[in-house]
Amino acid sequence: MSQGAPDRPLTTGRHLDHVAWLYDPVIERLSFGREAAFRRLTMEHLAPRPGERILDVGCGTGTLTLHIADAVGAAGAVTGIDAAPRMIAIACDKARHQGSPARFVAVAAENPGMADGAFDAVVSSMFTHHVDHELKQRVFAQMYRLLRPGGRLVTADIDRPSTAWAWTLGWASRWLLLQPELEDNLRGLLPQLLVAAGFIDTRRVAHVHGMISLFVSHKPLGAA
Image 1 (cartoon, one colour):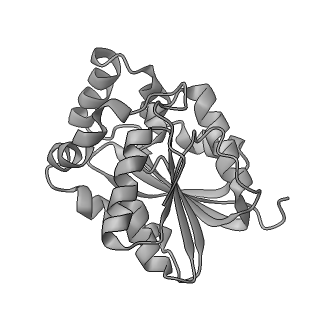
Image 2 (cartoon, rainbow, N blue to C red):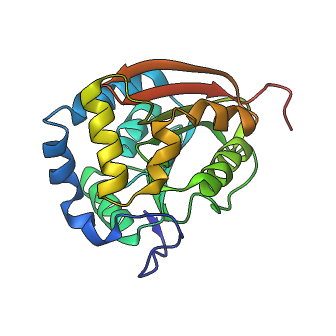
Image 3 (cartoon, rainbow, N blue to C red):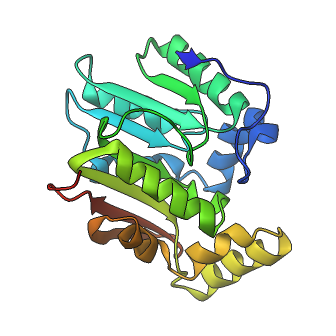
């Protein structure tokens, strides 16, 4: 289901609304067929359990969100948010086709609304490199707010390159595509930003393709 998707993006950050119809086939090709394996890796570290409430931030067309919804079952609740209305529309179509209870909302990650502590877990896959430093800070602060005390965050995104090929690709993308939002990621600053937002026990649990890392963090049990 969807909550009133507007006809234009809702954020000052980068978005992919204009290429939403191409997103799924292009991602599959750009990943050389490894997108499904990366999704399984993300699911492994998120480890969704039946009955959990989980938020997918920057959900795009909802592929990961729908897999999470299958895992938490009817007793759980999964919400995907994205600031690109056309992405949300595609995600809603997928949910209807699959008979999934996953909920999709067109809203900016830096201003999502929703109640404090509403979720047991938050996941974000390949989203933060689309927003600048200030928006990253605001987004991580919102993720922290939305998690219950003791809840977990799984962040999968571009990180400091570990191979010459990945370094060349990453920095070429930053300059040739005029995407300064990549710099925090390429400089390896995501863990620092997570700590600044209040998260603890931040660990890099996987590093693939020379430039994509998965981080697992937690909100302290005693946090308000």
